Image 1 (cartoon, rainbow, N blue to C red):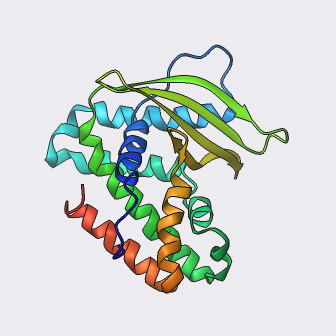
Image 2: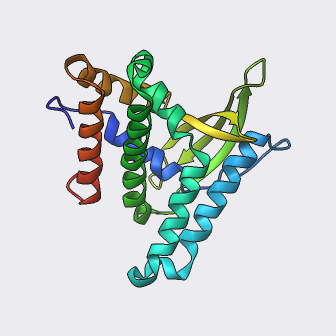
Image 3: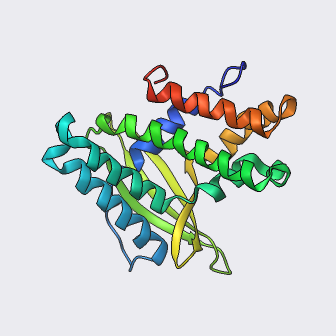
Length: 215
């Protein structure tokens, strides 16, 4: 997507992020907040699709994969994700460019996510708490992912209320923000290019992932 090598932490961050979305956080000392309930509902639906016996059959998998995609689109605010990732330069994008970028960025994340689903190995996620800003306009839902080798990885979902529900606008894996990580790469492209060139590069990247050229 760029001639420069991507950040060395990005593949591992994306992989952990997309695995995390597969697993329902468990264990709760207090009543769940609306943000956690929204996240839990979507993840439950994803798990239901994955556990369906038809999912392992390529001939019957497509509708279930579509259900999974719909749930990811439902819980993630990709326009917010996109604007925060591009940063201050987002205001230089035209409305059409903003929509185009959001669509291709969502496609990149979605395609990577779908390619990772078959890697489900039974890792567990434990709900560890929430941090709410004083105005109640942002909530960070905190989880702890336990990998098969026993390594524990903190994963925090940052969410905001919009259109009557709560949506994810950033994810922190081991305290590394996915938004900030991508922002570094996108800024490098925008420093020498324009929004249309960035959109084109992200579209190519998504296509490469879809074809299995990028793991």
